[in-house]
Length: 281
Image 1 (spheres, helix red, strand yellow):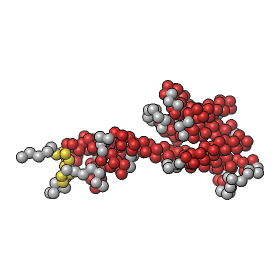
Image 2 (cartoon, helix red, strand yellow; image 1 turned 135 degrees about the vertical axis):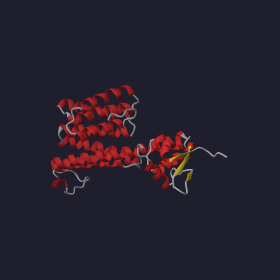
Image 3 (spheres, rainbow, N blue to C red; image 1 turned 90 degrees about the vertical axis):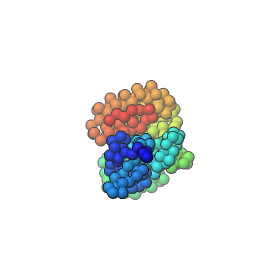
């Protein structure tokens, strides 16, 4: 009597876009177990109905969804809400990872500007700033502290409040001792924090102020591109997809003028993280 249709590991790999090596690995970890294993040859054989679960695995792993979360999706492949929850959580992890990279980039900029030796000096951010140098260091510490909170995946309401107040405090100190570039970056950070918190109106206000500062002082390169990015993100939070797309186009045009390729790629990654935006690179 004929049994169910069986396909080889190579046939399954070609149908779903996975490699045979990946399928063997998923077998070893119990994610995609073959229907049969030939005792003589060790060949793995799969049922035809395993094609769709394998395609789901390929799709989720293509965006680096962790294996334990892929396993949850396979347990309920028809539960769209459950899969969406997994993807939303994964997006939060990716955004936190991107924020960590941006935080490192900003801290590196400050080390270059201030000097690594000076930055090694311990400074208590809660003490009053006695000199312009102290106030500048306080602005940097607060700015970086905001990034650490943005990176934190399990922030609570008190963390959100602290993050918001620190962003404003950093911008205040930059206003006393910073350059126009520092001011525009401070406005950008305030806008990003409000966007993360889902507060469109203040996100738009600070994004506009950041762009005004760039235009007033002739600031270009990635600061101008990120001024456009903040407006695109704030409009997306406000639900205005048309304006979000228009400002995204401005950011993409400004990206062509960014000198460093890695800075340009970071901007494109940030633009892709705005809800409703396509992949640009």
